[in-house]
Length: 228
Image: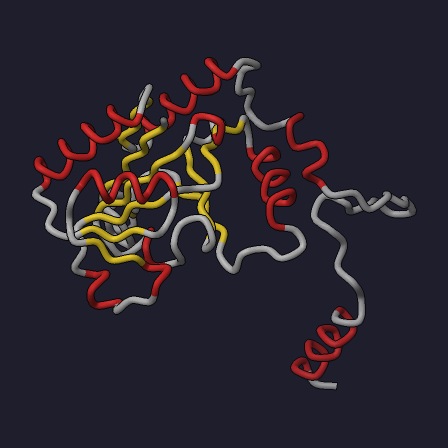
């Protein structure tokens, strides 16, 4: 038997065996019950604090580290003023968004021509928009990230193509940690999950070339989160 035939035989044999779940491997002669490894994730994930105030402070800290502009607002009039200030500072001409209570309010406040991605759209028109405004599923205190899905954020392209992604969230959408996110997604969508679930931690970035950080390489150059 040639070496090639020997390799193919071993591959064929390996494919006949079911792979164990990650974290459920047992040693020689041991029988470990199959249990999702996420059941004990909080034992090794970083602590996030027990109160909402602690978790919000932690979220804000991580946002600063990730170069995300985070604003905790008390009422919608503050949101309107903040959006108009951004619009004027960056000279937005066109916006893209999707239907939703918070996004509808934001688009009305901006008063700009707005492309809605949940009503059918031209991708070339979306590429010309200065900002993409979306809602979200959750804010994650443990990572400073935002969770969006194809159902909560107007599809796949809206969070990627415009150079500035603005997320508008509610305070009650802050969750403590990653296990809480997966529990939330399970409760919200199972068994019919969205085709896209994305964890966004800061603006798009890469450090591939000489370890120099470049923002906006594969998506939005700027991420702003408003929490009301």
